[in-house]
Image (cartoon, rainbow, N blue to C red; front, side):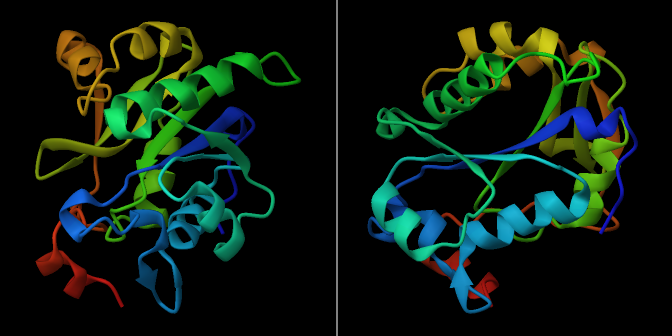
Length: 209
């Protein structure tokens, strides 16, 4: 397991796992089987092994079933009753929960959050660790890149949370904010250690093990 530095330890993982799997016949993505367990467990493990000491998990579709079937012990679970509105509502819910818990750690270091998506099992702990290592301050804005193209995970310093949440609507998530601040993003190449595919359709299910 990657051991984070003191500064990196102030970064919480934020896993967006509320989707209802509309193009998968209404099967919630968090519960898709992967390596014999619900997919959400894999995503939590990746964040922890990548160095996130605390993991917030935003639940929406079939939240009660996810709680019952998945081992999410030690995670901070955030309910998003508006999950059907799209990813933006889940990002807002997660950032709001983080903000309520404070923008600095116990030592006063500015916090950050590393955002990942439950349906990207090709992104493992090494990519998380690379992005996490780039956290410097409450103004941090870092993203994994794949052959130069921005992707997940994305890291936001705590001083950016309110503005990101304000613009997170529909399925856009943080895209509007990231486009407006593109010149400030530190890209961390991860194409040699991860594949950023999504599990969106029936055809994609073959990527799960």
